[in-house]
Image (cartoon, rainbow, N blue to C red; front, side, top):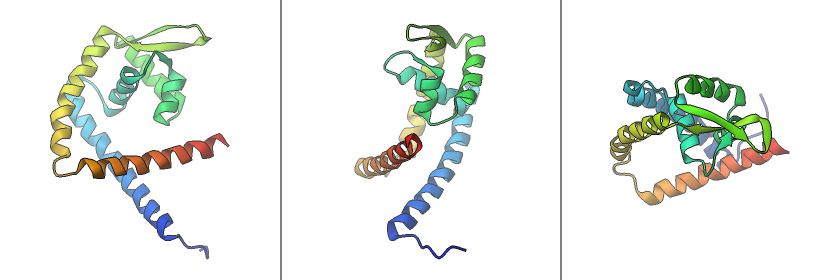
Length: 154
């Protein structure tokens, strides 16, 4: 065992990380249930959302970086979505092999149907939580995410 001890903040961040891991698992399960009737999973829905909310068409590698995951897993799912006509690949003027991924009209309708299910669900989930508390939580998570990104770049 190490002689080092957590600082007060280090212990609090450790507890937060564990809760975020647990929350992530619960969100995956809840998301799977929520969009199952649409033939989606949380993973597919998350990728559709990343594509839908991108400011412009981007490559699979860019979407993977945005999501903080490995490109290979995203590529596999995007390839499946492309075979089903939910996304399509377009030429990338900046890279011959890294095509851009965009939603097809079928994909856009599917994403909108998922959001229509998500809105009442998330409104119910958020009852009794103050917007200020949510904003503070989001700021802390964003700061930790930024620090982890900086660590991985150095």
